[in-house]
Structure formats: C-alpha cells, structure tokens
Image (cartoon, rainbow, N blue to C red; front, side):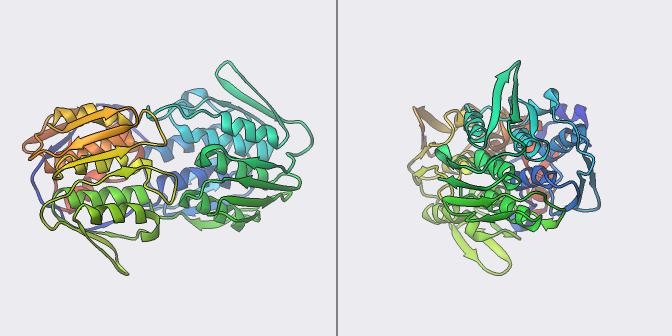
Amino acid sequence: MWKKDEAMDKLIIEGGNRLQGKVAVSGGKNSTLAAMAAACLAPDVTVLENVPRCKDVFTLSEILQALGVRVEFEGQGRLVIDARELSTHVAPYELCRHMRASFYTAGLLLGRLGRAEVPLPGGCSIGSRPVDFHIRGFQALGAKVVTEHGYVKARVQKRRLQGTVFYVPRSSVGTTINLMMAASTASGTTVLQNAAREPEVVDTAVLLTAMGAKIRGAGTPTIVIEGVRKLHGAHYAVIPDRLEAGTYLIAGAITQGDVLVEGLIPEHITALLTKLEEAGIEITVDGEGVRARGRGELRAVDIDTAPYPGFPTDLHPPFAALMTVAKGTSTIRETIFESRFGYVDELRRMGANIRVEKDTAIITGVEYLTGAPVEAVDIRAGAAVVLAGLVARGKTEITNLENLDRGYENLVDKLKALGAKVERV
C-alpha cells in the first residue's frame, strides 16, 4: 500500500501564487482510525465510507491484519473490515511504534478477546502523551494491567469487563475513545466523566451505536455506556476532516486568495473561523461549504489552544504560519502538548520572527518569507512549512514527507487545483 522509497521524496514549492477555487475535504483521518478499531469489536463485516487514503490508515490496516482482520479498500473511500477471524491479542511492535492511534487496539482487544498486549505507541514528536490515563481506565473497568518489555499487557479478571464510573483526565480524546470501545461490551453501565467532546469522539459513538452499542451523551462531558454482550457490523460514513479543511482555509488566507472548502461541517471549526475573521479574512458559510477570502492586510491575533470546542492544537502550527506574515505581534499559547513547537526552527529558516517562551510562541509578522530547505518534523508542522512555502519568495524544498503523508490525502493535487506551483520529486 505504501512504498518505503517515498520517504526520499521532496516537495518543491514556488511561492507567490494566489490560491483560488474549490477543494473537497477528505474523510477525517483521526475519526477513521478510531472507527477502524471500533469496527473490529464485532465478529462481523463493517463497511466504512469516506475513508482517506493516507499513511496512518494504511499502517493501522496492517496492524489489524496482523491481528487476523481482513481489511480491503474497495473503490474511492470505501474500506471493508471483516473482523470475524480476529484471534490474536498481541499487536505488532514494529508497526505500533509509528503511530499513536495504534493504542486503540488495546480497548478493542480487551473488549473483544478479554486480553491485550499492545506496544507503547509512537507517533509525532509533539510531547509526552502518556497512556497512563488509558491504563487507569482499563483498571477501573476491572482489567489487570502491567507494563513490561515495552508492552502494555492487560487481561480481564472476570468473564467480562465491569461497568464503572471514571473521570477522564484532561478530557483526553484517546482515553475517551478507548474506554468507550472497551465499555461497549462490558457488564453493566460505565459513566465517563469529563469526557472529551471532540467530533471524532461523537463519530465513534455514532458508529458503535449503529453496531448495537448503547451509548448516550457523546459530545457532552458525561458519556454513559450500557454494556451489551455482542456487537454486529454496520455501514457507516466517516465525518469530514476538520483539520484538513482548516489547513486549506488557512492556505487561502495566507496567499490572500479565495478558497472554497467543500464538504466540511462548519460547526467543527468554529474557533478557527472566528480567529480567521479576527485576522482580517472574509469568511462565508453556505450550503456549498466554507469560503476564505483575503481582503488585504492580515492582522495579528492571539490564541490559546484548548479541547473542543476551543481552538484545536492540531491547527496551531498552520495558524502560526499565517501569523508570520500578519501585521503586529501575535501569541499562540499551547495548552495540550508541551513540544508542539517543532515547526518554529523550520519557519525561522524561511525568515519568520518567532520566539518561544515556555508554552507560548510569540510571532512578530515580517514583510515577507523566503524559500528555504525545511523539514516536515511532524504532521501539522509539515502543514505549516507547506503554507509558508505557498507565500514565500522563491523556492521552498520540504523533506521528511512521510509525516505529511500520514495526515493529508492528495495534498499536491489539491494544492495544484487551487493554482499552487508545487511538485513532488
């Protein structure tokens, strides 16, 4: 599915073109990963629609296949998951170490087989994202959990997991989804307090409900799950990718262009739209989608990232790229991940004026950026240097594209369709 030599690819961007036109948003990458794991809770066949062909989806497909699941793409955006033969409770180390969402297999395997041995996950280097919250939740559900030799090993102590009341620390999205999956087939009722409210959590709950789970309250701080003995397959379309949509809206803004993003759910990115308007961008929401149009000078704005419905941490680096060419000084305070600032040195190479003080990036806008050799150090930092390259004078050369490939489907083709001069070589 994915060629290893693609890690040697480079993205070459000739900046200075005003982006104009329409772009269709892909299915949500983060929602898809949760949905793929949730689908395997049923010893049945589930069909997911609107699935993006990005590297993280292919990696999780391989992990699930190693557990005995059949995973096949059929046509554009359709993924067929046959979990009838899932039988292995040990997830493969080499694959899991590359992505955070691999830890969803822990909730899946505990809920389905009563046993799970899952490697401590890897992913983007944006700060510690300990699985302690997940482990505490599994223990509250009655599992015995130990960590040894790089694996989290969990086992149901009774015949089934037992319903419980659990306070989700920091409204963790991953913890909320993992416990929701595990609790779906537990005995009794589970109440998740301080649950994450993100659209991806709601999407997973809707899919699980379509599979026969009894879940209410998703999208609020309290989720109640009444365990059922068995789930069945379903046919389900994943929500649009709010982070990809946000990236293209910022692309329109940074180039003083006119970009219409089709197929997104505007309510999922209200915080971004508000900040774009503050920055001087004209935002129009209608039946077609959301349109971002430049109206001249960009203004500096201040942001604090926050759990949904606040400003998404994953749109912090792309928005920082926008602020590098805004008039005035802006601040972006990162409250979710302490090492989210990997993009800073890369943007500095392009002439950006950014300094970091503790949890805050302080960005003083410059008259122009210049093209330079830079690296996509993680998924969203990669988006930041792409956006900067679109507006920079001269040529920007981006390496380590594997990170961009993890989260963006058909990035080059979509940018070209909007008028960007970009090539993958």
